[in-house]
Length: 177
Image (cartoon, rainbow, N blue to C red; front, side):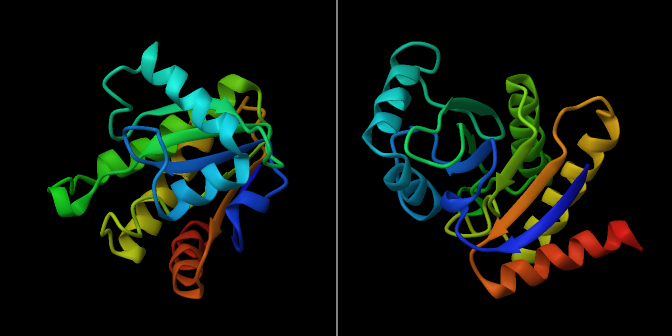
């Protein structure tokens, strides 16, 4: 059981679950959200629309997570989570930590053994890369420690740039020291 970091394309990860840094509408967007929707194909949007008309008519709240099939992705499932937007005054690190723990809870409930997460909120939502990394890695570490019987053996943070990778590597190094 472990946490790892890689530089790469989230949508190409050979894992059970890919975490989508979604917006609350779940209907696609830019950044990670747009990339996941493009890679998963149009059935993902249809599944998200179904969620909106049934269980999430007001959208997905910040810090929560919900699953859909992965469709055309290598991953079996997509777990969507909405990160806090600093530009809108959502600056509580607990909201960001909840994105990670809620995603892990959902993945665990699916019986997943591996999950790939992006740097939630570290892009357009304005969180500092190191703060986002510290919060995310701490949340994953604490979740794994609190769930010794989980089937999740791989928690992989997939970063799209060398500066984000460096931030997550530094956060991870604190736990290994």
